[in-house]
Image (cartoon, rainbow, N blue to C red; front, side, top):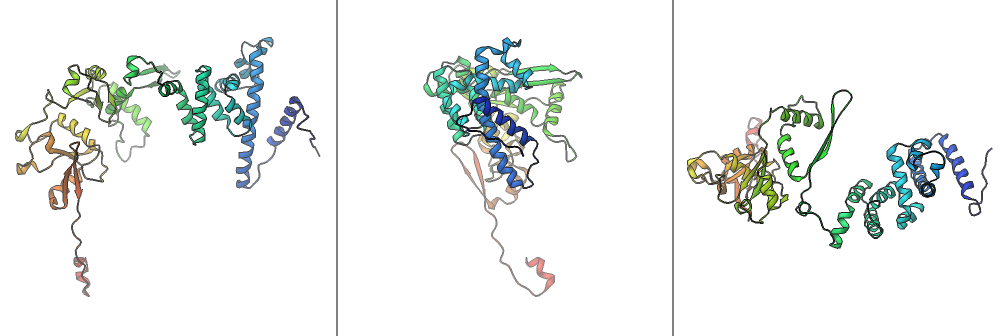
Length: 414
């Protein structure tokens, strides 16, 4: 029988580490209990203990790093020591080193981490955000990010927020001084391409809102399943769509920048994309000239919006206007996307009451379009302040049921 007797208050750090190592070695050889519920509880307890040990490790590594001790052992850096001596992958070694170096700058994090009230994942996320900040902003960031933790945000969400914490602090304190493009909400897109050993390519990048709209407008339709038998997942279909575009086997890009005529002639009136993303006037004038981007004028201009009775079918320009007003079918409650709907003459073109003018058209899915023209008495039409028509369905009155003893009449009676 093996046993460990130790006075925790009197034991040295070395003795406690030896005990922790002995306990860890014993646990590693134990067979997990058969009860899943027991394993769940034990996992929680052990994970919290491991997080506290990580807190201790950060302190130990911090001393080693600050003293440059690893150089005495012939290693160029603490990170190299963590990789070679402890067998850590580069990302894990970097994470532990950041925790060691930022721990003293994050007193609340260090305290809660050591007490088992904060996981190592959250601690590492906040430490990573602190590396880009001065001491004053570091304290502010610590409070902001810990508040997110307390609100139940995931470590991934906190990490994403932490990546732009400098901007958030500046916005909150009204001290930001971004360049002109940043003030306009514009950030340059980027893309890297690396060839693999088998001749393929890895792609990695980020697109700003405008370029993302072009990307979506070009690839979304091409990346749809080819049919019921198409077993490709979305990434495969997207890659195939991109290849089709690069090979020239695609239709023209369908991206719209909505703006007043004054915007294109030099005023500061902002424009927007069809999804509502605001575009500063200067930027709208710039991207309106890009290939694959169509400026859609909401005033007099070279886009014909009012065609009267001379034209039966709406033009592509008019459709772009309608798709800005109708994200879905005009029928209230119908969720068919506007891009998949038909153009409907609100009052019926054949009757001469609804010319092919933009303010007399709406988007309606194929089924409801046919229903509307065969059951006009069951639809009430209203119009919102934005100019969008709403079709309200009024089902026909239920027929009174009749009861008959003749089975041959049951289906007819029903």
